[in-house]
Amino acid sequence: MSTYVYGITAGSHPSLPDGIDGVGEPACRVRIIKEGELAAVVSDAPENLRPKRRDLLAHQNVLTETGEGGPVLPMRFGSVSPDDAAVSSVLAERADHFKERLEALAGKVEYNVKATHDEEAVLHRVMSENPEVRALTEANRNAGGGSYDDKLRLGEMVVAAVKNRETEDAAEIQQALEPVAAAVSVGPESTGWLANLSFLVDRESADTFLAAVEEVRKAQPHLDLRVHGPLPPYSFVEPGPAQHAEPAPAHN
Amino acid sequence: MTVVPAQQSGGGGGSSGLYDVLELVLDRGLVIDAFIRVSLVGIEILKIDVRVVIASVDTYLRFAEACNRLDLESGRNSSPGLPDLVGSITESGAKGKSKGALSGAAETISDAFKQSREESQSESRPRTRKTAASRRKEEQE
Image 1: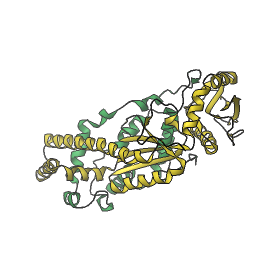
Image 2: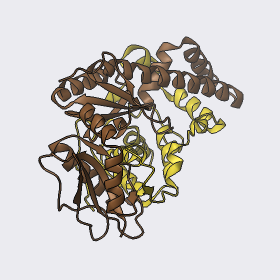
Image 3: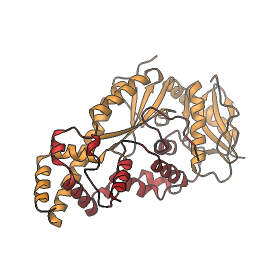
Image 4: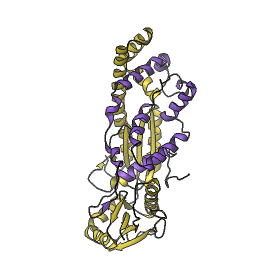
């Protein structure tokens, strides 16, 4: 029977989520594998596990429960070990690395911020910032909408201006929120959003972080900001990809 | 079906929030080479940067049309995002920019994402373009 791994935490974790529901239908029960000073949160791996919403949520839920009692290193969804013994040997082999990460993430949570433009609002903004766009719009309008080529030219200009705004807005969001976070991790680009930023935030100073988000919302009404957290620190499990924000994280 | 993420949070909410969180569950987190990962066929497309979608003739025409219908005076004098601006633009049947691009990719993604997106579209969430777009659509009809 292969073993599904949710995350890695300290063996001294005060409230390990032993016995709660995990992935699978019916849900597999979560159990704990201890090795040295570390513990892995696992369950049996269901047959034919697929990234269905139910299972993604179960994965997320187990990690959230674990994270409330102490730091946890969340595994990416779908990590399956051949058996329990293989989990134990991974814990033993990389104990120092995992302990260092758990220490670094103690008391910290992830907040993910995704931003999109409110289309009407950003068009107004682009229009007010860009006399050329405004002039061409008025010319087209006076010509009853303008020719196909005129429309194309205007549209191209507007799209370029909106894209510039996207880049500038992404940078501004990051600049505004970096100072109230311990670290930032920039997520992959996609058309789904103009910014996808994860911030590592002290649980204690989450209010400060959320207040800073509100400030951005007020200052930039053409942005639609979606904030999610506190989350397990998915984006900060490895020292590599996460950029450390300035100032350097304070040690508690 | 009422499954909600264990952690809903300040500002976000609704199950479009679920989509945002699932992206992290699937794409971040610790990967250990001694473990295998379940097959995520179709999910990988999330990582593809499909920004080229925006630079199409259709997009240009749609934006030109949107500008043509935009109230220039209110654009210059009032702050963007005011409720009375909603409805000053009508889109000629085109989808909103982000919705078109994102749902285009999401259509090939797993059931999980389809479900969460469908629910997010049926929920009323102010201030999102999606909601604004559907509201405009209703006004046209």
